[in-house]
Length: 317
Image (cartoon, rainbow, N blue to C red; front, side):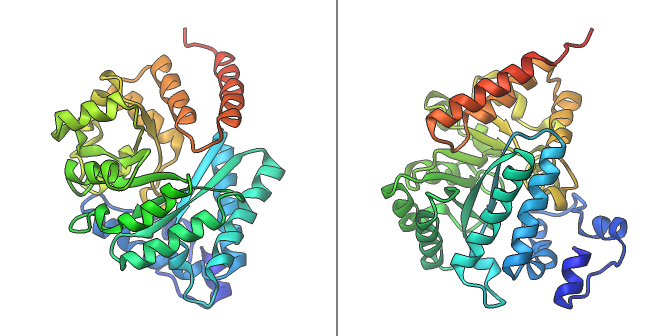
């Protein structure tokens, strides 16, 4: 961030890496809107193709260093167009960074393009069109992100219909700052094949059963759900409930920078606060790979590689 800020002539709240990391970290006393406010510090730094390419590469590099084998990165090109970068450039640049990471490191990655809830639905439709345009070059899905309360996913149904009409993967942030009705809209009006967060799904038992019966994966983010006050604490998170009920649950980081977390830390929190043992975490890991927006053959091959790696892990004595 400091190097990108120097290149762009932007002043940050701190001039030393550790202090800056602390400054952008979410305290946990706010809500989702406060969490999203942190993007005002990072988005201005990623308004050129070079900055976006570097950010994508280094994200993949950080993930690879903690043994992530497959990564899906979500963002919205519309938030990177203030410096005159075209939407096409704003997609090609991170794809180039992720491709470079795969070539140099071996980590596989896909890009998820987001519409923004608080923007006019026509913007979301343009983002969905953009996602479709790049779906054979590394874009794997379309999503809707941003402040959830008062901004239902159904308002953006035309964007999701466009993605669905072109057989693109769909996931929707839902059930974090709003209730299960947001999840229902994501599923039934927006064709969601996965749900981002889904924390409040348990408030509607019938919908919870539907999600379980139709094997809709939940992208669970323990740390950020506490920070945005979706749950009071990790120990009170419904992740354990959902897993025990047989739902398809995965673990994700949400925003690694703002939440000051890693995927490794999220797995450890599940162990430490929700009692997940090694075998259960192995199952969660495999559910993540099974839920990936990958072609079937590629997914099967990746699962075989991962299962072999997991089998090679020594069990604790």
